Amino acid sequence: MGKVKVTELPIKGLYIIEPAVYGDNRGYFTETYNKRDLASFGLDMEFVQDNQSMSVKGVLRGLHFQKKHPQGKLVRVIKGKVFDVAVDLRRESPTFGKWYGVELTEENKMQFYISEGFAHGFLVLSDVAEFCYKVTDFYHPDDEGGIAWNDPHIGVEWPICGEYRGTADSAGYTLADGTPLILSEKDKRWKNLKETFGN
Image (tube, rainbow, N blue to C red; front, top):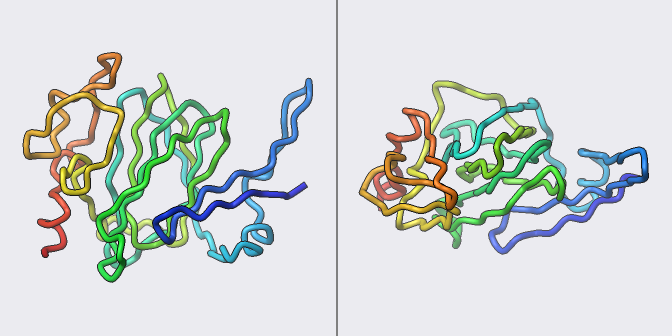
């Protein structure tokens, strides 16, 4: 037991982690986190907090980051399906402003590790999704930052229908089946990358 597959993605600092799953007619077992196994791939981060959220279909949370206390996040879905996205906010990075997205589901059991220095968000594609994530720093409410989920300069290809109207407001956007996009009031007010970070 304890075997895991780790794939480094084209944007440095992002990884797909696929734990081994052992199943039979009774169900399955998997190690969702093994510090020693991840360290063998050079991933020796220390987690300080575990979080879990539940969201209904059409909810988009993001794109979030912490300004002075950046968090690395190991994210996974234990119920349902989401489209999960990370955006590189490291000013010195050759991929600054670039994004990567992956579908995480309860069936594929994939995990997405997002190093410090990225904004993160996800869109719920199933009726309900339960989302779990480990973080490398504590949540600091006064340190919150965000970027408009639909910033055309970033160009995240969310599985959403609707035309950009110059703001992060969700009005007029839906999933392909007509489910309205749902954002928090705070997420509707985030600015684009250039307005947030300058040139």
